[in-house]
Image (cartoon, rainbow, N blue to C red; front, side):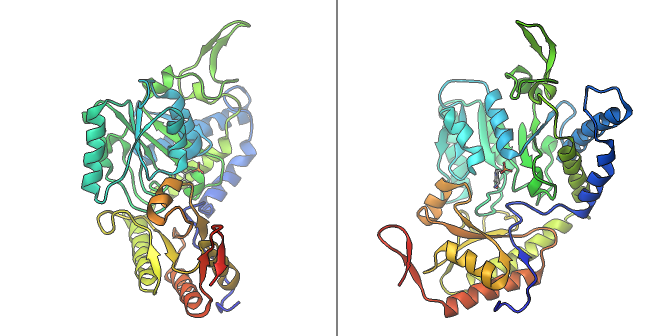
Length: 399
Ligand code: PMP
């Protein structure tokens, strides 16, 4: 190691954020009550059912869900959009409109339905105008947008986007995977129709996420996962389905995951107002300014300085393949970052000619010294290493 300390530095919170102690404790407290949900009459079964339904309520409260919203427990954000795609009314080709900066989770289900794509413009105002024009040209059932980009960290103007969607008779669905862990969201006051997010990015374990929003589409949709619990009555020839959320949650649900996610929501809600935002914003500025000050480092951004940004920075180092930068930081400095196209290929096409990049992302527990370790590592690489280029075969080769 040339980095001095051998303490592992996790700068990959945007991929998955380690579970909080409060979350692990809640899970440990719950485990003795482990029993069948919704169907058992035993005491442990009743406790499990109550815990599951209380978790559903707490998760909804955390994001300001309205009383009549449905909170569907799903596996993750990807699953949430799969469910929503099966529920969006079919208004023919182009029923769904989205931008070209989305994570694939909020792109592939819509692409499969024949969605209309609006390219993000040079400014936020021009992007909003382009979306408005597209929705005015032809109505859409749904405008699907990212809350915060997992590549640039930029936060989209949700109030304006919601107003545009509603003005043209569309609903709005927000990919909250990168937003909810960093900013307080109030579904009701923003008037959002649907919000999706993942527990594993919100300091809870893998395996539970949510889709929250308007009941009518979910009640009218075919069951997303058909099975026990999703029905009112079954004969050998006919099934009467339950309403949402049970309608889409066939089979034994992930009660532990829901309990853990609710505990994470409570832990975040318990932080002093604005503390998380201030902590991350200070570190993000230090990270972005530091990287920006290194010769040959370029940050990937769409609307530089125009919008709020959550705690992540994606960058390329001129002359060094992203894979090499990430492996160097890991092997030589014990720093975990992420490299790749971040499941947002169209955005990487725009911002980096389709090439891979490196992402450093912050969270609760990140510190100024974590950021400085990364900056030192990148500086050391740039100062010392041979430069690389891409050969005609598209593979990196040393100059
Ligand atoms: N949307 C965004 C913006 C994301 O960053 C991610 C995770 N990389 C997802 C959706 C998908 O989340 P999950 O893998 O938990 O389904």
